[in-house]
Length: 463
Image (cartoon, rainbow, N blue to C red; front, top):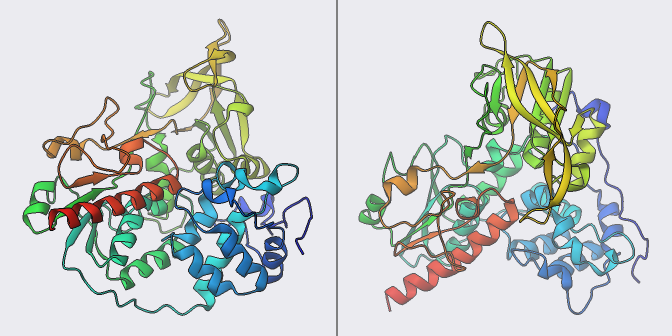
């Protein structure tokens, strides 16, 4: 019989006043008993609406049914049948706007905690399951993947399952893309990412780091070396700025730089090789998940006063509700309906303040959100010694500048059709390199789509 409790089983969590001083994972995960209790809330709807909200089409009711029975390994195998990164997705996917949004239980009460259950199953497998190198017979066709983020890793995993000889080329010295440089340890432990990547290596996927495609080797040279198709999943790592006076002062960071130093280079450690200044008052400009990550990292680095400055209201804040709540619990302040117009500096070239104006919401813009309008004469100055810009990113222009016949749009994103095919024959693309900055799970969905298209392309080419 289904558990008709109107609320999800609560997940244990570090208290806000404790976790803001460490980089340990904030949410602690379900116990076996919690997972089985939550799984029993699933109604096993015959139409499976939750699956329609999953970009990688995880068989959600089927895996939840196994959790309710206590067969956690079988639940994992069901998830892993369509998802290469279940431990990652269980932590960072916006389930509330995808699978859980379509859960029938969510019409009147809280939906089934699909994300929490996926995380539990993946973690259980990591601790108790036995990994076996999967002996997949090679079909002797080679595919190159540019970028080892969620799109590239997913594409690589799906192609490896089909017998392709896959090599992933990563520009940084560690594989994982945004999963290792962008998402903080307290949201996604890097050991989790490492283990997920090890699983792909067990399938035969090769990963070459320190390979900047377009510099170390070009797309043309990859084809010349025997690769029959190439997938570009290089992400969107070029930070955007507001082009306002003072943005080049010392103490002004892009969120990309700040988070990379924290997450990949471990700047929070005493012996970190790329330390970050010990600021007292920091402002983060932006309202997305990246802004929340940067603010919460700054707090953990010892900044006394951390403030999110966002030009719209709380209702328009694009970050996940859970991340906003966690930030508030950790003491992050929010200066809403506020827009910076100038960064002020001292005589030594360091940021000393930020001039802002207050905003009000007008008519809806193209995005459907009400457009922020400046209130004349509302200027004020806020004293700060650190500023982090988290207003979005764009794809790095290197690939488009070094690859012939690769069409891009006015934002610098690679143009690809619904199957991931680009204007260059044999070249496919997906994830943030195509859409601009988006979510991990959407990038994974694009990687799956491209893998299917690459398989069809190579089969047709060799038929």
